[in-house]
Length: 107
Image 1: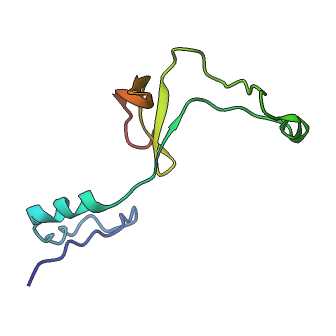
Image 2: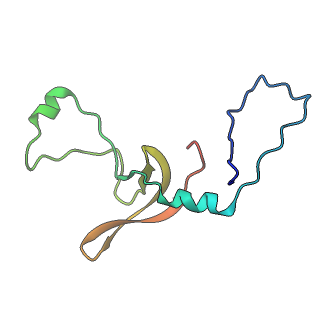
Image 3: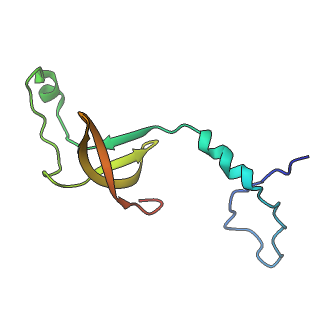
């Protein structure tokens, strides 16, 4: 029977005088199964704050000024959280992102 990996939430008020419980060994194929999980990846070029009256005036040909300058890196967001930064590139008429920096967890 395969062993299960248990992850318990960290309790900041836990009694640290007792030794921790032994954890189940992690099977190598446990991480391989994570590769099939789909995530939502979004590249963010910049942001803008608009008032509703300005938003209502937008139409074809309107330009929305973003908070980033030309040449600044774009953000790669994974499930809405910052993951990496990079530069926009063109690959056979498609846009892409060349990663230049992986962001620390919690950035």
